[in-house]
Amino acid sequence: MTDSTLRDSAERPVRVRFAPSPTGFLHIGGVRTALFNYLYAKQKGGKFLLRIEDTDLDRSEARFTDDILTSLKWLGLDHEETILYQSQRLPHYEKIADDLVNKGLAYRCYCTEAEVEATREQLTKEGKKPMYGRTCRDKNYHLAAPAGRSSYAIRAKFPLTGTTHFTDMIRGEISFPNEDLDDFVMIRTNKVPTYNFVVVVDDLEMKISHVIRGDDHINNTPKQIFLYDAFQAAKPLFAHLPMILGQDKKKLSKRNGETSANAYRTEGYLPESVLNFLVRLGWSHGDQEVFSLAEMIQHFDFAHVQVSGAVFNVEKLLWIQGEHLKTADTARLIPILKQDFSAELGSAGVAALQTDYGQELLQHLKAKVKLLKELAEQFAPLVEPGVMAVDSTSLKWNKDETLKAKIKEAILSLKSEMGALIEKQRATRLKECGWDHTQVDLKLRAIAEQHGIKLGDFTQPMRLFVTGKATSSMGLFDLMPLMPWKTLDARLAACIR
Image (cartoon, rainbow, N blue to C red; front, side, top):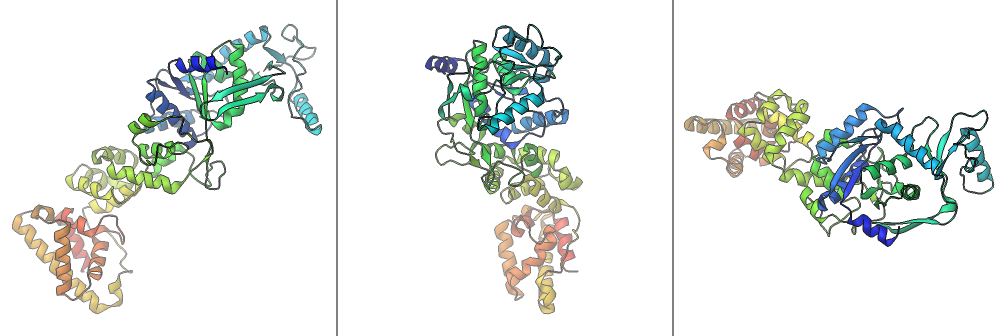
């Protein structure tokens, strides 16, 4: 790429695209690519476009397309303009390929797959790079087909000498000797176009200014540059992002991290947490770890995108999620919980989300848990109106009847005192009587001392019966002032039966 081409491309309005193939669920690596495209477009006042590369008719499925669209919407990576579907443009691609044949820049190849493979095997035996033998390159078969042959592919007439080079926005100058490059297929014998051909046609017609994609596409770039030259068109700028690796430093797979973007929604991650984590896989801005989407847009640049692969660390993702959940607007969490975690909440939990008590619980719990699914699971037993069924076999008092009797007397005393306070003030919760974490703490310590028991022994059975769990993210001292007295009274009564 010449300096003038680089300058001309950079001066064009920024138009980038995300172009997934609907042959599987949206990969988390694809989300990172979409994010970097989105950030660059938004920072430069450009446009972020979406193209569905569904030319693999056997493997492309509508459910995968739906997953792509749903996942991008959930993440807030909204595209502009109309989505381009390649499968709707097959005759268009064939016509353009035929035009290149007529101009002498491509040719019809009537070789069978077996013949092509035999040539490659022979070249391999000779210690040479396995390539197509260019048997049909100079035959002018577009004028007359060879005898006995009717099926053909269309191949690019790639230069045999010289060098193809380009300036990558991340990696700098990259070059390829043309003699090492093949006359790649543009249109297969079944009339379906190949990736390297259609992306150039589409990028030109979509007026794409910057091609931002994974570094596994670097070897495709010289083929695509040949096509830009064949079309006598300005080339886009290229930026090849580092690969996302698993903990084993190999390509990310389900062995070392969930690969489907939608799976993170199911597990209870916030979309901003996923984006924050992904932007840090290969890019940095000083020592900052936690970013809002606005901050990502403000600071993103290619100068700080690394070349080496970025390791996918699930623990780091969970930490980032926790940081975002702590500061998330509680009101915003309610519709998310209703939509995605109603099964974990149960009917009582869904109803309680709109109550003052439910929103106070969310405010406390979101600072203690990491995932929304966990938040729903912790929330549900705290808003059930009745007594929860619990397994009390692990309680310490089961090994000491004297201790058990003292604790029950202490709980009865506490319950009586709190009940009298509620009745006197005609309140529905201890909070309305002026009780908070500190008041509960002082009262429980005082009663434990009066009955000659340790505070931990005193609170263990109460925590189990009041929260419904042996361990709960909601502290007992925080919960008791908030819980409706009717429910709290019933659960304390169950504790001392």
